[in-house]
Image 1 (cartoon, rainbow, N blue to C red):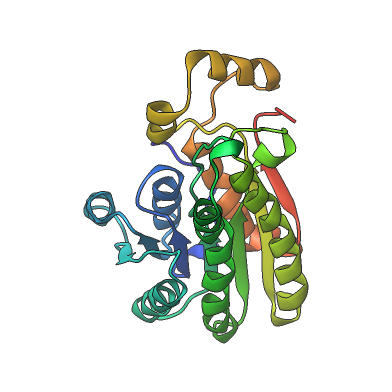
Image 2 (image 1 turned 90 degrees about the horizontal axis):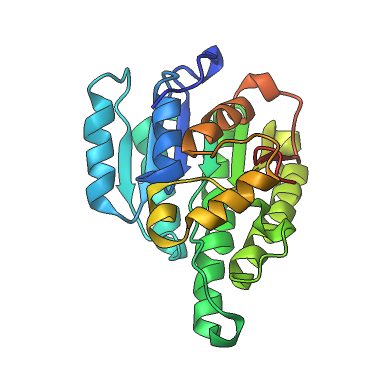
Length: 256
């Protein structure tokens, strides 16, 4: 992967925690922060790809990333993982809430259990991970939280109503946390990706026709990948965005 050449000197040596960091967008974020010299930990439920990522990045990293296994939909397990990560890093200044589950489901087939599970993975855990991380970020003298939402809820997409509900809720959570934590010097912003082409998306959902339709809608006539989200995440985590909070940054190639 080729990552942004911009160096954010203030991220060098800082403690960064990323959820869902074992593959896809999360893995790109882990690598991007590692290349800035940050001390990075990531939480994921999938052990095999996570350990492979650690092994790959440790070869050239100033600080090898730390993997903590956890099911984020379990609040006790998620918060214990945050505390373990913060302790292993020594301090924590940045939290990137990336983990999510964009499963498709017809409205008629959604059950209460499925709805609750989707909300637990996409929205509920984001609050409780943040709740556990904030004391460490306060102790570090302030920092940043970056929440991953999606443009999907703005496009009237009908194939995943529980997911889009959660992604809309993340914007409300972002603004509420920004108001609460601003006096502590903690900035909270959101990123709304457009159609990001990952191996999982290509395997499960994306078709040639679907990608062509989105490219026709985008101002930028190229597919977007996980790498396109690294620079915006570094910006929101760093002092380059020191006066920015309670905002939502859309990265969609101009689809909206």
